[in-house]
Structure formats: structure tokens, C-alpha cells
Image (cartoon, rainbow, N blue to C red; front, side, top):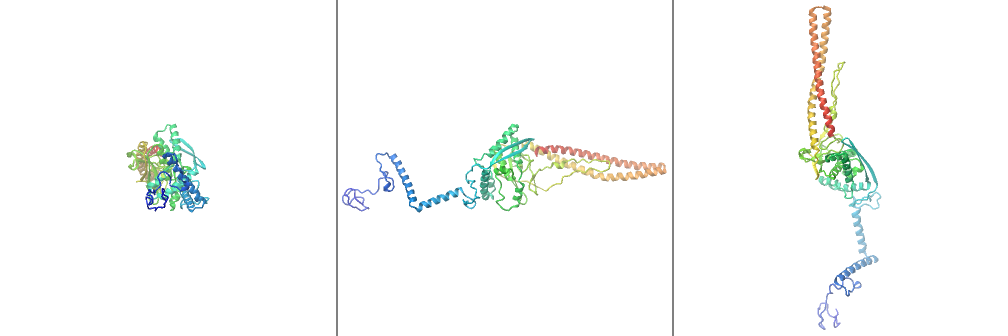
Length: 485
């Protein structure tokens, strides 16, 4: 080290010159020069401290980019590694696939799907939805896009594979909609606007939404495939956007769509998941309602949307053969049962609908509860259901009476034939004998035959009265059924 005063050499460890005693500074003055190589050092003359600091920051930036250029120009390995690392990080974020990365040379790779970002709307498809509610026709024409369809398919596929064993997370993942996707809002608004044009109440708007989803065709082919397959990927439900785009769905996808639409118009909702015998299960949406009228005392009313014909609060039964929900009460079982006596002595037979093998749904697990308004239409529906059940009980009793009276008819018919034959033979004898005794015998047998005929007629009359009462109940039953199915 050189002394600045006497210019003689001194040891680096000395703080004072051993020759002249001048203090030796071993550190540079802070704030005067930035810590950069000498060739980039800038002297600051007549510059304020704040501006001087800004100039230092510029100097640092200049030196950084100059260093980058130097690495590039001289083929520095660190520069090349940095570029490679940044490139792979970019690929990992934007082109993540099932195996870690999508092959960028694979023509089948879905570059239209931006993982983590909503795609541009491409490949439009116009769908016409038509349905009926309360005797009036409704329709919606909307445009959906294949690029968005692929986006939801990809996103829900990842969620399905990671959450299918966690029911709560699984259901919630299929109810997620991008902020940039307004299809649920658009459809809900169309339903509400058309409902207001027909002066529907708020409860009726909820029912109209249920009718809309019910009108979307049930995908029996997919339902059968899900039931038969053991491939977990093939069991993946459909996102509501996929259901709308395909214009078909099974219980799961249609239930997700219903919950989102109900939430959009302000009704509370949830999902009911039912375990059924064997490999069967069933999913249905539910609308928030008063607990005293709710399904299973849950505070929610079951809303069946797999197929048409169910009002909110009506529980279906599931056909074992094809897993399709069916009406709990079958109007076809209450057709005309009138049995009438005809001239040739024969009777018209009652028509019976054969019972099918059904599974009763009960004790659902409740998921994805959403706050909102209460549906009050269930109060009227419950009153109708109570009346239907009462009529069903009366009709069942009447059917027993009808069948009992009907069973008496063959015996009475045979009795009439026997007494009539005996009376005819007595009459023939009287014609031969012509005496009072033969006449009295014929008269006695005739009265017995006539009494048998009168008993038969009275039985027929009583039977007809019971059948008329039965059919009156059946007519009321069928009118009520139309109100709830």
C-alpha cells in the first residue's frame, strides 16, 4: 500500500504511515462510488445526494445488462444455463399435462387450452333449448364454444383425478366457473326475463329453472357406460358448461347446472348424494326450504332433474334395471275399472298395471350448501302430496272391496244357472201333470231362481257403486298428479 503523503510503501495492516505518520484509509468512502468495476465508475460532481443515488441505480442497471451482453458475446455457460432454466420454467407453467409436460411436437396436444388461464372463445356452437312450464312454452338460443368446453374438461379432469375420493372437494370443483365465463348468468337472466313476461312469482321462477334443466335430454348411453366401466377417468362427471354444450347429461352434470342457476337467481341450494344398493348411486340438487316441509328434515327440498315430470319436493324411486328416476305415484294404475254385466253373461276385466322393481332413495349426504332465499312453493306441494296419499289409501281400500265383490259373481252366476234349470224342469212337469202340486213346486223353484237373480243384480249394483267411487277418486288423483309431475 502507498502512503498518500510521502508516497512510500507501507504494510496493508498499518493504519498510519510508518514513515510520516499520516493516517491510512483502508475503506472507500460510502456513498461516493457505486460498487462496480473501475471501468464503469462514474464521478458525481455538483449532484445532490438523491440524484446521486438515482444515478447509482442507473449505473448498476447498465452494468448488469452490459454483463449479460458480455456473457452472451463470449458464450458464457452461466448465460446459457439461465436461458434454459427460464425456458423450462415457462413450459412447466403453461404446458403442463398428465405426464408433466405436453410434447410440443405432438399435433394432438390441446394448445387451445391454457392451463390456469381462461381461453379465447373459438369454434362456436349455437344451441336451442326449448321446454314447457305450467302449460307455457319457453325457449333460449345461446352460443357456446369448443375452446371453453375443452378448458372445463381439462380443468375438471385434473380435479377429478385428485379429489374423486374426497366427495366435498370433488363436488365443489365441478361448481367452479371462471369469472370470464358468463353463460350461467346469461341463461339465468333469460329464464327470469321470460318468467316475468308471464307474471311468474319468485317460487315459480325456481320451478321454471328446474323444468329447464329437466328438459335437457338424459344421456342414457353415458349413464350405462359409467355403470359398467371400472376406469376411474371414464367415470368423471361433466361440468355444467359441458352439459349445456352437449345438450345432454346424467344426474351429476344436470345437478351441478341446477345449483349454479338457482344460486344465480338468489335461491339457497345444495347437493343430495344417495347411496343405492349395489354399485348404484344418485345425485340431485336441492332447494332451500322450511325445515318442516323439507326432504329428510334437512332444510332443503329434493329437486329431481334427471328426467321431466317432477316438482320440487317430490321424491322419485329409481328403476333397478336402468337407474332412471320414476314417479313415486303412477297415474296409470288408476284407469277405469268399471265392471259391467253384459247380455252374454260375461264381464269386462279390470286393468292392472304390473308393479316394477324400484329402489327407494333415502338418507342422502348433503354437500355444497349455498346460502340464499327460501323456496315456499313446497307448502302447496306438500298439501297436494298429503291429499294424494289420502286418495291412494281410499282407492286401495275400494280396490279390495271391488275385488271381493267381483269374486262373488261367478258363484252367483252358477247358482242362477242351476236354479233356472231346476225351475224349467219343474215347469215342464207341471205342463204334463197339470195338477196343483206340480204347480206349487214349480212356483217355489222359480222364486228361488228369481231371488238368486236379484242377489246377483244387487251385487252388481253395489260393485258398480264402489267402482264409481273408486273412479271419482282416481279422477281427482290424476288431476293432482298433473300438478306435481
